[in-house]
Image (cartoon, rainbow over all chains, first blue to last red):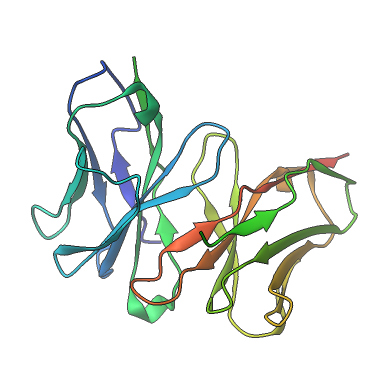
Length: 114
Length: 112
């Protein structure tokens, strides 16, 4: 069964460093998302991406965050200068129009900022 | 801010019993409703989706939707210890690109 894959599964970084989280969405999907979940809290929407541009972003997704689809398969989230409060699990997700509105999640990348 | 509300639990049920999980949402324009299961430290896993009022059954799971009451529920029949997890209710935000708004989740504990 096709799945969304994410790397790395866990990354520890120092405050102020740049981090890139990588995702390979399901191959025929057209809509891509990043969500995050701070430990013990709810899953929060960060950004959606369609047709090679951001379609919607939350107030969390400030200038420190960016997304990119550098080729036909990868979808990346970059955090330019990490803060302690960026420590969270980051989930990539994707969907296509034929699956209705069903969004499929990757296994997540656990980011720890120290 | 559009919200999705769930009782945080924990909901404790004995093995073999029916577990009933509830969710309310605030945006009347929402059209798609989802239940995800999340084990600790893992990603959300889709259990059920429901789009129309009424019941939808899939194996031991039944989702119920009442748009007039802005209420969606999940019933798990013959609960198993492996069902112990956090169940997340998610509602699409209408318009745009169908981002999901999640509730905080209900922890379910099924004890033998």
